[in-house]
Image (cartoon, rainbow, N blue to C red; front, side, top):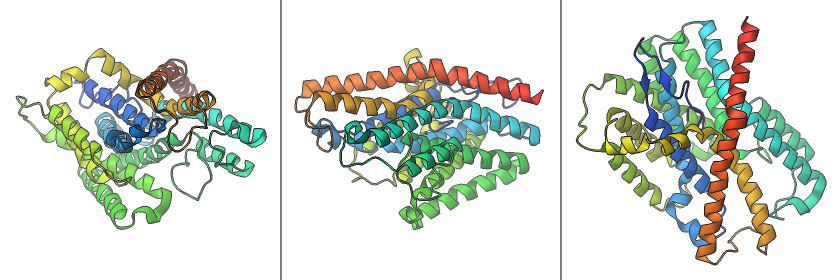
Length: 387
């Protein structure tokens, strides 16, 4: 859920030319994207060890998706706020977004499509939870079509299944990109600011007053509201001339974030109410205090590497967790569902540690074999078509 949902690395790894020849690189922001992706994984990891499900950070990890949206708006406005001036630049912007999103999304869509077909034709033997019967063939084919045209997260109609469920944020971000690109192209700078304020306010007010009554469309509202708040955050950054760098504001914001995520929100999904402003403040504190201890720590190579693979990590983690559930189900009886079968703390640490290692390793392999080659292939294809 970052430049893309999730989580997608920004153009040239967030190195962009806003006013030539000056270039800025917000490396620590990329690291935060990686940590946020791990928070989402933490939220989705099954409760194999019952005390794990009571940890606040595990229950509230979904709030990291709101951070992705705000960060995505910040980075995209930083990259393209003055660079979409006509049909040609708008088309290039769209192609570049697709190059970032689609190759990885397509691969895992097909992987889960194959799994759902195997469930349908193979029966209950392929189910970890026998309480969830195979989806109908019609719903499987419909889910495939929705994923291929990136509308699976828009809530157009009720559904039985998702293919690679984290990809809902990729869907909403792509169409938010189209709104953003058109607004930058057609509006003046002042008008774009008013438009961003209006979009953020409209989405937040609608979410507050209507909430769950709009069904899955609330996902689009969360994405669009957070994204344009991120655009406003980048605009505010450009107008702030000084900052008290003697205080590690980023460290304070990170501590505050951990405290909020540790609270008992009783399964609420409207954490955007604190996640949006907190994300905006966290991004601002980081880019305005690049020499703080927290910023320097986040700029170290391990964190930067985690941020680099964050989109691939985010997109592959559902498949890794699916395989892990099956393996654990085969090793530990009864089947893994509901309260976990693990009662030993040492075994739980080993299982969860191995699961996270596999997710991170899967993200790295996906980045090397799919994301990077796919990005280059789509760019080359678009250049050939242009010529």
